[in-house]
Image (cartoon, rainbow over the protein chains, first blue to last red):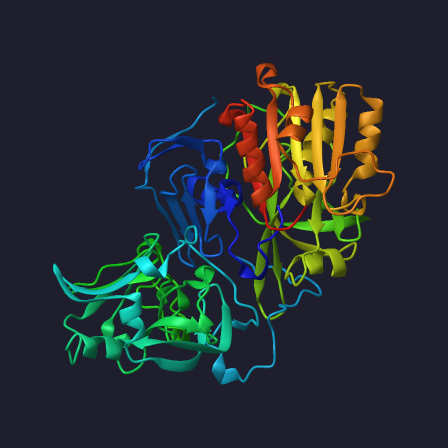
Length: 93
Length: 206
Length: 254
């Protein structure tokens, strides 16, 4: 994928956050299906809309724009917040 | 852990002729104005816009757009520093200072030691009112003389340029005074609670 | 590198390692492919990407993601880079980098936007601009495996000169009656151009993509606006949302 030039905010997707998420989950979660806590819709993590990629990852539901997951890689550690998700389901479809 | 290898011939294009004391540590000057948002740009109509100062359950003051525009206007020129390492020098902003907001609601000083800024789209950031008084902070409505573009936080954003720019919350609608500090959107996810660029307080623990 | 078991999904830490540039291929006037040797490369699936990190002498670092354009069967790892106006990293990768240079790389990353031969088809690939890169890895993998899984490619570019991998795509289509490649040129077309001359719309999608009852595996990659538009139109054409896999590249491209 091309780069986010000039630090411009480009709406990417969960695929672009895969590296950061793999630092946290140790395995790739882009295929995992996540249920939005706000509207209940289910989508693959890789298909979620990604914001603020330069600061971390803010993954939002494609249907309702609710924040489903957030992650940050600081200089000391990694943070993950998933209060916007009802569930995360791994494994093959 | 060993040093990462230098990429031959790669130079940060952000290096420019800058007096050393203008740039906080680790920052690079940019001439463009990068956009970074935690969510989609809210499309706000000024006819529906209000701004509120709140303390507990009480509204200290609330203004619609027309009313807000009649408050004393201040213009400043300042440098801004983003935690993602870009800095932009000599940016011009116009708006209502926090001091004038307090005056407008009949207060000579902040009624509580902490503030949470609440914004359209749900973004929040916490900043001590001590860092907003004395001309340090404003609710800005113009950038370079023109209405702030939606992608840059228009119609109004908080402006606290002496802190990292994530504290200058876009699409601000309400400042809520708090007796106890609470962490905002980024502060609760690993970013520094205060965010002084001159002390390079990017992350919690810095 | 041998073909990989597509059900394998090892949990492992992503580590930065060194990549060495072995070959540079000029694809278009704006686009180059870098062929890299990565010492401890574990193999990858078509569609995955890598993160590349550059470090300047003053310690400044820049990191970007690029899709892997080579199939797992190839020895060297290929990333295709489009030079972005006023960019920070791409002008370096496309303009300055020389054979023998090294930089840091980690990967492969991503398991969602992946297709391998065992997944089956028919395969429907829709690309805008440099979004063709991960889809090319899929097509090359299909080719190396000599799998004649029916495939249909719709590739949107600004002009013919902007079409990446054109000769290779034409070659694949010519040799394989099961593969169809359609280019649509959105801004500039040669006079004699008989193909579509417009942005991807529902009619084009209906024409190129297999109908929903054939259960195609659909991959869409390119600028965010194109990807979201195409996905929406495909759903309107009756495709189930979960059969459409998307990867957004940002604003550049067709």
